[in-house]
Image (cartoon, rainbow, N blue to C red; front, side, top):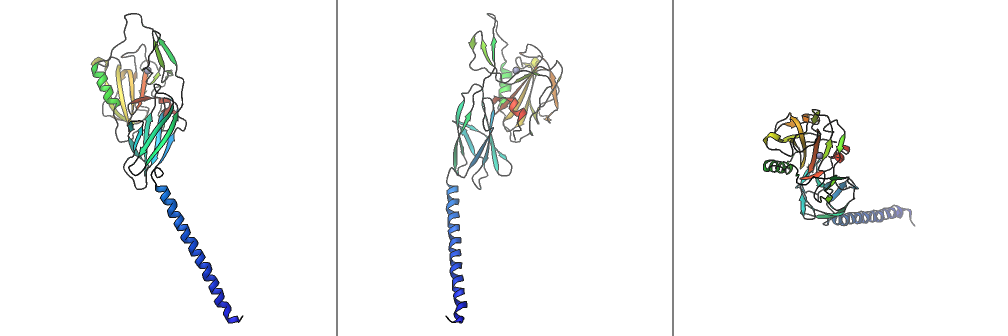
Length: 306
Ligand SMILES: [Zn+2]
């Protein structure tokens, strides 16, 4: 072989190598496109993460949603036939809160998330939980205090508030320094009969008469009611809107130190412990509602729900 042919052969070999490398690159690009299409098929583009991972009855389920690429309007989240509001979270995500109660059955919940580009169906299992039982006996003919139309209407309107801005930040603090005398979720028997619709919709604090009641988190005063103006059951009551469907109600107070519309930071005083309304002794009842349903405040005290 003449020496002069060697450079040519080397070049040819290099060309073949280059071609193979080109084909490999083309193949890789094609594979990427195929995989990308697979990711974009309905049901795979939309991501969702639940917290807590192992929820129990009474806890709030938080769903963090990564929408389909380019989708900026809130997704629609349904559990069964009920729809829950979604709010923007961070730069490109959404968050939905689903309340659970002691009245529900434990087990699987079917959650459907759709943003009109794709739909994701998920199952979340809610574990059972034992709630304390209380037996209340009335003497014949004796009935409890009845709520007035005015308080029922105003309290119902307050619990239905779903405002846009998130006003809380991190873990909730205790609204009173007293010990908790009755936990969330207590079930009752009245004269030996199980009350199927009753559960203690809040947490009681046995702070002393006149001890301060403070906002457990930031919010806006959205309800102020007085016993002498018809709040016969709630007594002197304050409702705080924390935003995005999360509201707190504080009942039976002796004194109220805020006005409707006032903005609050966590720790700001709203009143003092009393025994107004349907109450047998000085205590604070704190009810925490998520999308209109009473949930366990203890979870919000121990976890930062952001
Ligand atoms: Zn209570």
